[in-house]
Image (cartoon, rainbow, N blue to C red; front, side, top):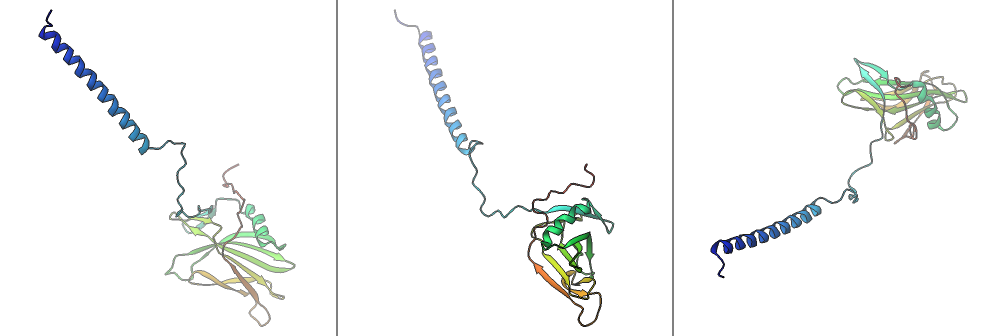
Length: 202
């Protein structure tokens, strides 16, 4: 019996559909492989950015509002870190932040200052603070450290400034034999291992 033209056409249509389906599956698999290569698995480790520098470790200490310095951490919590930073038995009894702007043409500089005594002689330490765009004050381990040490007979030392930066120390008594030694060090460890809590936190 000779197949009818209708049966032949149906057979041809089914054959074409099978080939089309097979081709579609091949294309989908190929696309999936390409997509897999373009987007690696999340578990794969990403290469480290060798050019990226160390993470900023500054901690927020205070904010400047209408030219008033407001601590956001308890000042007393900074006393022990200052004692440790001196590292020689200096007893710190006061911590404050000092604004310096002797040159009004330049931005103000802020220093975290610790005051104390060592064997009856005055000692002070000042650490320059980083100022953010919203006038928040941060202390990082890269902040320069300045130390004033009073010699015998001098009861108090003042930091001296130029262009809003500490340049030295001077004794409160302006006379021969009354002096203060100024020491400078790049970087500090004041807040190393110390996590300060906001004053509003319990």
